[in-house]
Amino acid sequence: MKIAHISDLHFGAHDPTVRDALLAHLIDASPNLVIASGDITQSATDVEFAAARVFFDELPMEVFVIPGNHDLPGMDLTRFINPFGRYRHHLISELNPELAAGPVHIKGINTARRVLPHWNWANGAVSDVQRQDIARTFATASAPWRILVLHHPLMSPKEFPLDVTVFNGQALLSTIAEQRIDIVLAGHQHHAYIETRQDTDHKTLFVSASTAMSTRIRRQPQGFNLLELTDTTLRIDQLHYADGRFTTFEALSHVKPAVSL
Image (cartoon, rainbow, N blue to C red; front, side):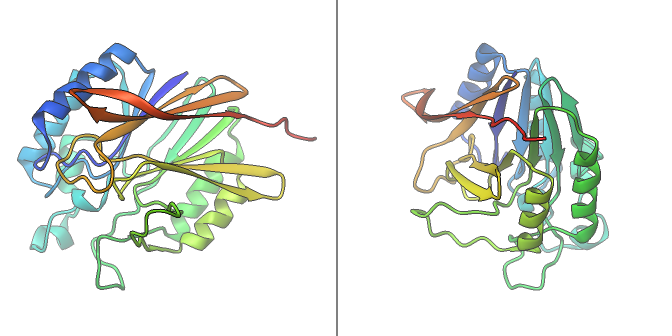
């Protein structure tokens, strides 16, 4: 199975040339699934969501999407009365989607919040109800690979000091270990990296993507991740944009250890 992991499209603050190059690459690569891990828009306007809907509709494969903090309206009444109304209208009503397909069982959770006990509402949070939902999801999952998708990363690369707070994040890390989740996909930082966390006899890969097409780049150009999975193997290609196209700049191979009964 082949999965493209894109994030932080930021329609409304995107580069149309990169947008078209990404679309062409995804169509040519023909992944079975595209996962979009939040910040689909820049300011959560109807125009931006409509542009995102057009992009997703142009893709010939299924799209699995979750919201990010930029998919909430700004400081207006809509943010507090119906924060995800436009997102639900244009994209998908479910904020914590789930999908079982081939060798993967995927659970997405919404970590964006209309308000937080912090000066920076761009940070994220996970609730106890969401952690229970994750546990229920994977309690009966039989696919070889368990994938969790969220917008805000739970781990940061050592070379990139951008601070991200996820309230209740430590509790979520415990849930990830307990449920033996194999891969956690995220975005938010506009920086591609892979970190690992070992808990007893299980390893989890934390995989973040750069911004796929926005002009808001940081230390890296636009990019995305391409995952290829069999029942026992995983390859992750990290791609970035240069000279009008996306190419692989780093790749990781991983073999899933056999589970001791």
